[in-house]
Length: 338
Image 1 (tube, rainbow, N blue to C red):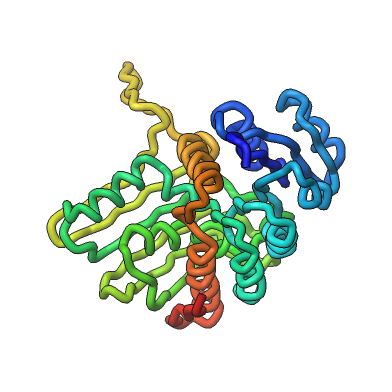
Image 2 (tube, rainbow, N blue to C red):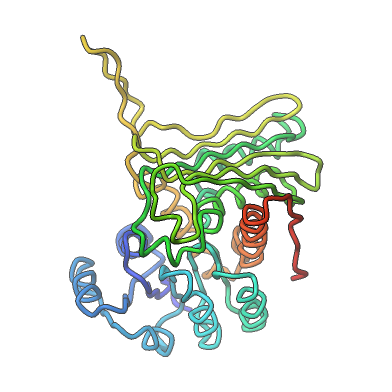
C-alpha cells in the first residue's frame, strides 16, 4: 500500500459528507478518491463541493475499483449487510456507521465473511474518540475512581428525524440508545447482562404508526455487578444534549457539557451560554480522531479500537432493550460467540 490510503465514501448525508470533508482536508495519510450515493444529482453536487473528486451513483463501481483501498459506509442501516459483504469480497477495508447491521441475524451472517476476508472493519461509535470520553476511560483504567459501580447516559436529540427516517431506523433503542450501550460497556469494562426498557410518546404522535417512541429509559445490569441507566429522547428542543457519568467506589466522573463554547454572557437580562446545536458540531473532533485512527490502522494493519465484534455486542444490547420494551419485562442480553 502507498503512503496514502485511497478511500471512497458511500452515502453523502450530513455525516457521510462530513467524513468525506475530513478525509479530503484533515488526514494527510488518506486520499479521497471517489464518492457515491444513489441519487446522481446529489453525488455530482457533493463531488463538486469536495473539489471535483470522482463520483458515481452506483456503489458497485466503488467495490470493483482496484484503486480504492478502503470504503466508508454511511448509507441507511438496511444496506449495511449488503455493502459489508461486497467490501469484504473485494478486499476493501471498511469503516461502517452504527449500527453495524439492522439485525443480529444479519450481523451473524455477515461477520464470518468479513472476518475471513482479512480486511479491517471499524464501527462508527465516535464517542470512544471524543476527548472527554477518552479521558474518562484513561482515568477509570488508572483506578482514579476505584471500581466503577454505576453508569448514567443521557442522549437527547433536539428534535425527531422525519417520519420516513423513523420508519426504517429500527427504533429508538437501535438508532439512538445504541451509542450509550456501546460507551457503557466500554467505560465500565464489563458486558451488559440484563436490560429493562420502558418508553412513551410525549411529542411526536406519528411515532405510534411507526411502532416507536420519542422518550425511553433503559436500566442495565453488568456482569461485573455494576448497574446503570440510559435516557434516550427526541424531545430536547433546546439543543443537542449528550452527557454521561461513571460512579466509582472512590470518585465519580461527569462527562460532557451542553456548552458549545466555554463562554458565559452576563447582561441586564441575566446569564446566558450557547448550547451545542447538533451532533456534527458536538462530535466534530471525535469524527476526525476516529477517522485518523481508522486510516492508521489500515496503514499499520492493526486492529481498530471499535471492531465489528463491538458493533455486534452493542446490537445485542439494543435488540434486548427493544424486546424488553415490547414485552414489558427484563431481558437477558444474549451473546453470540464470535
